[in-house]
Image 1 (cartoon, rainbow, N blue to C red):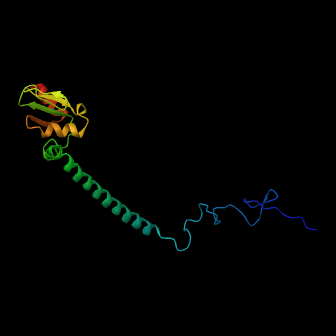
Image 2 (spheres, rainbow, N blue to C red):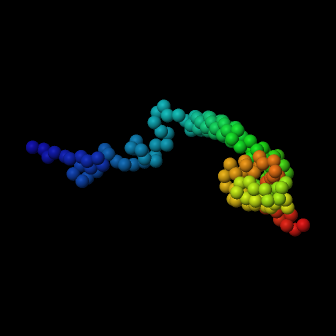
Image 3 (cartoon, rainbow, N blue to C red):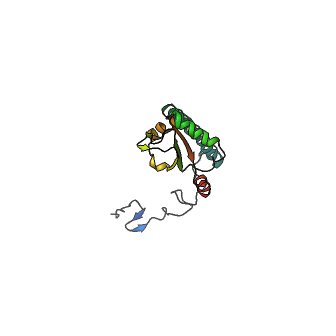
Length: 159
């Protein structure tokens, strides 16, 4: 009677590799040697083109979402949005605004939890972390509020 051979998942028969089951790069067991891929698979150029098309579609979706978000922001905070647009259109646009310069038309006028001076005071943007506070400041007719950058503060400090 012949002895039964037990074959495991690695192709071993009783602890020995089966002659026909070799894990070589040339085998079709997923090794690095078969660079062509399975028959009927898309070429590299087709994959690149498909990836580029997907990227274009995703970028268009992102732009649409950003435009929608920007429109909603402008609707919720029209004065702040106008101040941001004015900053972006100015000569200082390459610099990020770092502070607000607030000048009150009436000395001691309070808005956004702060008493403001006729002399004007520079406040770091962090002092008003909420867009609601910034909208209150920019929409207040008794205040003149402008964005300023660190560079502008340094130039004014030298004067």
